[in-house]
Image 1 (cartoon, rainbow, N blue to C red):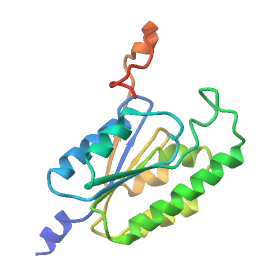
Image 2 (cartoon, rainbow, N blue to C red):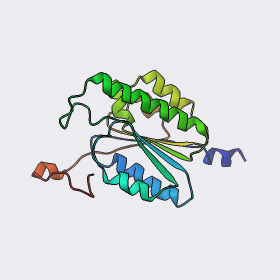
Image 3 (cartoon, helix red, strand yellow):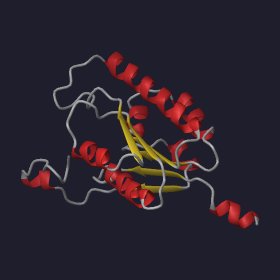
Length: 182
């Protein structure tokens, strides 16, 4: 009996690394979870001002899945000139929303997209983030994405996958492609 209970434990999964595919892996997991009638929430910590293909795709998968884009853009790149305080405010709001959803008991799977980036850029505190993750309900599956996963998160995670870039079209002068990259 105890063995079966362990198998039903909600997992903490981390997708990290410098290669592409972290968010894509998490979104792939949502397709599988929807096939089992799961309720899913995605909270994006960094992305926010661009129109991404996944936003439209997610809308088509409702009511099983919902997505909250909480960031105010890609911090420090792609022409971002917003003060750091604006990004920190957005990060705290995203963390508050994540806490509410994690504790609500309404979801089988919650994806915290680009949370690792928000931590590494000090948009949110380690202490608040760690408390949120450690207080998740036992049965909830939680996925964290983004480069630079902190060591403490790697240590407490059940599964960690590092995406490693080997070759990228950008190196040949090919820009991001609609439907593939965004």
